Image (tube, rainbow, N blue to C red; front, side, top):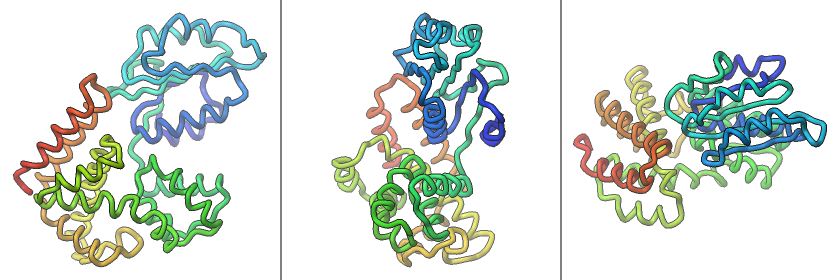
Amino acid sequence: MYKKDFDKLPEIPNYCVFFGNNFYLQEYENKILKKFKNENILKLYFDEYNFDTAKTHLSESSLFGGKNVLIIKHNKIPPNIDKLVKSVKESYLFFFYYGNKKPEVFGKNFVRFFEPNTRDIIEVINSYAKDLNIEITHEAKMYLANSVEAMFLKTELEKLANYSSKISLDDVKKLVFEYREESFEELFMLILNGKEFYENLNYFLETNDFKRIIPALIKYIKDLYMYNLYIKKTGASTLEGLLGYRLPIHINNQRVNLAIKFKEKDYYELLNFLLNKELEMRSSERNKEAVFWEVISYLKIFSSF
């Protein structure tokens, strides 16, 4: 089933596998933990998985009189995980799968998450804002949805909540602007314009995790492709009509010029390569930093730059 179908269920099934978008995987694990916070929860992450331990937890009566809940997180299908279903009676089993294939376990009890679109992100922002008891203008929400990676939204909103209970676009630009627009923008502009970027990259890596760069670059290129289609369809020279807010003129011009620079095949080649490398970093046993530098070498010589 899809996310929207799962959300409509009157009751959570006793066992289920979740897979797909990483942001939603983390979100729904947190939701499960929150819902069952008063129950007997056992978490087995990656190499912690042990079939006998998992089976025992699901089968035995809770020492505290509540429900036994087992949460498994893995980028592979753990051995015999499908057999655990037989041990689920009054207990709950949730498997959060971070691999790259559809997990053929648990039959129809699965939830597939797709990458959130702008509307989805706005819903997430609304939910966070409600929990934090803050009001955010529509323009500010649109800016956040288009400027901050989903996995970092909660942190940014918590920062905004400490600033004020009513958040405007100006507040967001003041407190969040450098988080993505400046730090990534300058680096990505250099890379995608075929200019020397190693000095900027090394400076960036002094204060940032290298694993953030490839997902952010993928999102940036996807956005450029969206801008490309919008410009071709409307003939517009600004992105305000698409984004719902006005960018600083120099950033608007940079993005427009870069968006129309690449052809369809360029976007395809770039995204195909980067998505495969991101998947390799996330799910293979190869050294992640080695994969990262392979990507950097590829970007250095990409022909369309």
